[in-house]
Length: 531
Ligand SMILES: [Zn+2]
Image (cartoon, rainbow, N blue to C red; front, side):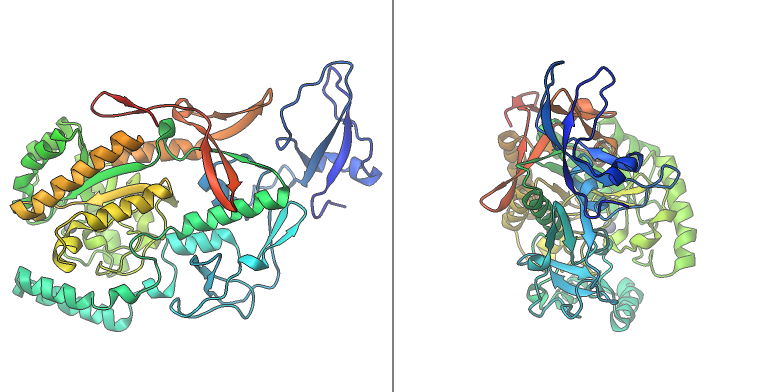
């Protein structure tokens, strides 16, 4: 027999020297099965029992897989990885009425998902009114009975496994013609073509412009429902950023051509004057020479070098075998440069092939790509794993699209995006090409961006980090866990001295996060700022 759903049983704890739990009201049969169940005691309030005390406590039992079996990825995996919360707070079961084919649906107003869900509620296009599956979540005790598999839906978004992200045959053919004719075009012709391509981009409803946080919304909704179902008042988790930082900023510079390469020395000075360090994505077989002095002027000033594409011809992901061949060269350049990170040219991408790239992290996935040549978007403002590789998504508009497609020369859109990202405590990552800020007009806009970021960093204690630092932190966090001893929660694991314990609570029907410690975030200027 097994407890299905897991039920709450009143037990009497007799404190003994061996701390044995003795069942008082547990059914005989269940008592006999005890080795196959895990006691979830971490939902209890802090308590301490003295020798002569007897206390009635509630203990939840969950069925445990036999010890020999590999732990299957469970339904809670993606949400648990997002929060790093202890086991026992999340308990999901799948409703058995799922459709065979995937489609679009909502999980809460405005939260567009793609995957299999309840029969008869799916749409083939994200642009029509979508049915909302949130009201169809059922509570079975503390367990949620879900109308979709959260792992599948979150993975579909992060890896852009949804139809509107894919290039149709017509688009592929046009891309082919464009790159064949590109050598014959000049910059203003290319701008014209790119603006033409971007026509009607504002009518696209999914992913959500200018920042899509569907993955975060799905996780929050599931946490909210878990709190409601269990009646608990809070769930502990490992705060997203080190030392309790509200969010994270990261500046990256893709070096496109000789003019940009020659501007790098000046750009290092500009960034340096704001106390900002950045990563430079270098094209190994592009239009400019890459010598050791060029790379070391970046490394030596505490900045970072990453590899950008191989030759920047826009065709890296066109053909599987050719990609393998290029990936081998890219990996070799990565080792030569001492680079841990990669970004493709023009954000062309196919995450299903990333396993061939021998880098610790990638930065080729945009959050919402309405203005990029390859549409789609990963719908998250947090880093996430693609196999062994960590993805640091690009969450703000590229300078090129801002200046040359939207014809904007202010930081208004960047500011709006940063506000939306910080509201989700996410990563605000930027691509600014040295090539496009040589002109005084655009360089002034870039300076305005640096002013805004510096002010926010000082005001709100945001972590300004290089991509490899984010990579190290996120990997360490992914191995941390939360344990309970003597009535309080504690984050353990390598690097946990920078981790902050946080709690998710429901306030006015919404999830809010509380950081437990008033730690401080180090600012590059040497001052320390209150959170
Ligand atoms: Zn580029």
